[in-house]
Image (cartoon, rainbow, N blue to C red; front, side, top):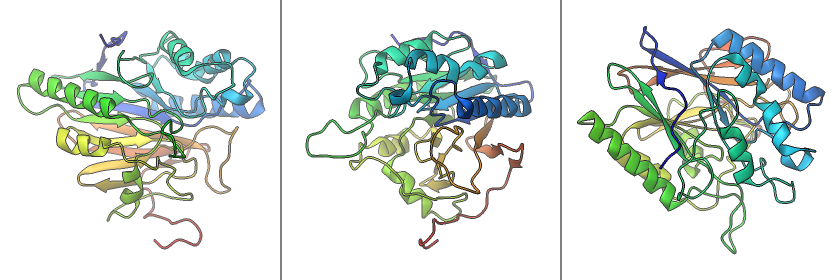
Amino acid sequence: MENREKQRLAFREDGTFTIVQFTDLHWQNGEERDLRTRALMEKVLEAEKPDLIVFTGDLIYSESCAEPLESARQATAAAGASGSPWAAVLGNHDAEAGSGVTREELHRTLMGLPGSLTGDTPGVTGCGNYALEIDGPGGGATLYFLDSGDYSRQPGVPGYSWLARDQAEWYASRSRERARQAGGAAPPALMFFHIPLPEHAEAWEAEGCRGERHEAVCCAGVNGGMFAALLEGGDVSGVFVGHDHINDYVGELHGISLGYGRATGYATYGKEGFPRGARVIRLTEGRRDFDSWLRLEGGEQVRQAPAKRPAAGEKA
């Protein structure tokens, strides 16, 4: 059985539900840069007052953590103290080989922290494949969370991991069950994980893509077929990832928005003129589409992202 959420999520009386996405904190041991990250998160949460906080991986930089599990507690402390529930998925740096912590240990710790709705579905590849349902009189919505893994485990295939076939099958099964419960089409849904899909690169070329791309899309070299499953499912309108710290664009491909959060952590690489921050996503019950904006470190709210800006030397 899938781990069930500890409290129910619900649309507000005005029909909205707001999510703040933090990504790539790369927290280490509570050093000065980590404290800057916490201060930024606290300011964003105070400004946006979300109904849910989502961490899309690389909460910690495990190789540099003296006590990785304690670092994970510190990294999520601002969320736990905010009063808003939160959920997390793991990234490729959260439990590096030789760091002294496994993905299973770290995920289990995250599940048990105050305010955490982080879940798991035993028997599915990875740690942290789960769904959260948002209640509402109009049928609500669904949030899917997947573990995109870390590095390829296929001999001869270098690079990052890809979402496995059973993860796509798990999503498809949950989507069909939600449709059955609704007596028709499944309620609108979003999906969150860490490593982008190969289709995120295609989304950059899509008409209407907005935001910035300052590095290549660091996806797996193999396409695991998740995007095809999403097209067939028909409920997921947006997929949000992290991993690439200086990308923040959102583009639509075949009716599905593929986008990045805004990198939050200071203890990792960035780019001058590309401030840390968070992505905010607001759902409205009964609508498949959603609103989204950025909240940056100086308090600036970027409601209308610029038309896509290519990295130096690239063509738009």
